[in-house]
Each structure stands twice: as structure tokens, then as C-alpha cells.
Length: 201
Image 1 (cartoon, rainbow, N blue to C red):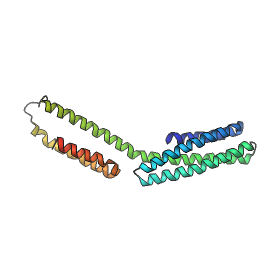
Image 2 (cartoon, helix red, strand yellow):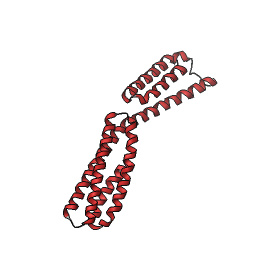
Image 3 (tube, rainbow, N blue to C red):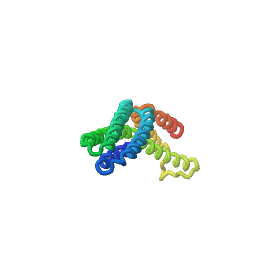
Image 4 (tube, rainbow, N blue to C red):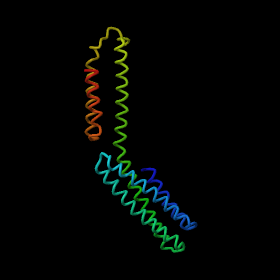
């Protein structure tokens, strides 16, 4: 969606540039612009359906619809310029339409950026948890094989309490993350709970 939105803004600006010295390129640019908008609209349907935040979903849907109206107006203005390349009013209308398209693209990019914060937080959390689980798996493997030796007179009982506290802290942090991110993180919470209960407790 970001790529399509940026391409729409670029093509819109290029239409304004070509309008003064090569208006015959406007139909080709209009066609490319329409193609990228169709791609953006198709991707937006999936994004709206899967977004966690209803507010971001509404912003995306409204933004894409408003951009569609702006693109239609831009293409119409481009046709008027091609038909009458020396008409200063048509050139001004095309420039104004380009400005509106740029504003609508900025709105969509802002909504996408707001929506990606939660996704990035989930990715970071999953990566961190995956690293912890990998370390636990390695430790369990060495302990099972009997090659995990304590330093000095240490025993597992000496560290058991700290392990339990750390495990509980990870579970609590995960619960907080789940509460903030919605139901999509429930599986991570369940996985951690089962993992800690089966391997540590």
C-alpha cells in the first residue's frame, strides 16, 4: 500500500509537469495512475479487514475513498488539459487536483504508519520471546543430556526461585501486551503459559 500510494503521488506530480510541455503523455500517466489506485484499493480491503484498531480501519477506508475521488478529478482535469493545452484555467485545475491527491496520499500514509506501530510491537515481542524460548530449549537440552554442570556447590534449588520469578514476569508482560494489542496476541500468551508450566514449573 505504501508503494502504491507513493507511486500515485509521483504520477500525479508528473502529470502536472507534463501538462505544460508534453500533454500527449497525460493519457498514459492517467492509465498508470488508475492502475496503481486499483492496486491500492484492493490492498486496502485486506488491510481494513485485518487491522486491530477500528479507528485505523475507518481512517484507511475513508482515506482510500477520498483519494479515489481525487484521482478521478485529476484524470478528468488531465483530459481537459490534453484537449486544450493552453487553457490556463484547465492547467490551474490540474495543479489544484494534484495538491488534493498529495494530501490524500499523506493521510493514507499517516494511517498506515499509525497502524504499523502495533504490528511492529508484536514482531519485536515475538522475536524477544522466541529468543528466550531458544535459550530455555538449549538449557533443557544440556540438562537432559547431563552435561549442564553447576559451578561449585550450586544446585537447581538455588536458582529455582529466580527462574520462577523471571518466568512469571515474562507471563505478566505478555498479558499486558495482549491487553494492549487485542485478541491477535492471545495465542502467544497461551503458548508462553503452556511452555513455562510444562518446562519450568
